[in-house]
Length: 137
Image (tube, rainbow, N blue to C red):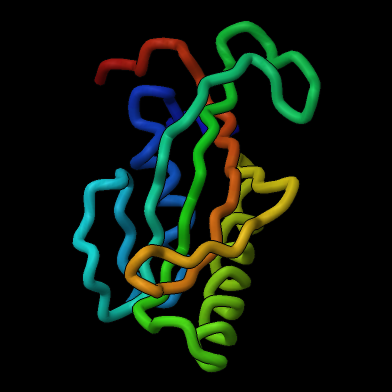
C-alpha cells in the first residue's frame, strides 16, 4: 500500500492512480455530480462502502478497503459503433486499474445503458487504504 494513501483522500488517490494510464482526452469525475452531455469518454466514481476485509480476508488493523463503483461512459448512443467504443473504453479503464498495486477491480464489469442512450460499463473497485491520521509536515 502506498504510504500516502489515506481514507480521507481516497478519491484523489484513485484519480491520481488511473489518470496517467487513461487516454488524455478522457474526463474523470471523482463524484457522481457531473454534466450529462459528454463529448469524450468519462469515468465517474461512486464511493459505496468501507470494509475491513478484501477478497474475503481480514485486513490488518488500520487498513481498510474503500469500495467504489466506477462507471466509464462514452458520448455515443446505442449503435454498433457505440458498442465497440464502450467495449474499448472499459478495456482502457481495466488496464489503468491493473497498473496500480493498491487498486483491485472485479469480480466482473457490467455493461450499462443510460436513460440518455449512452453506453458504458460499471466496475467494482477496491482501494487499499489506511485509517491512520495523515502525517503533518
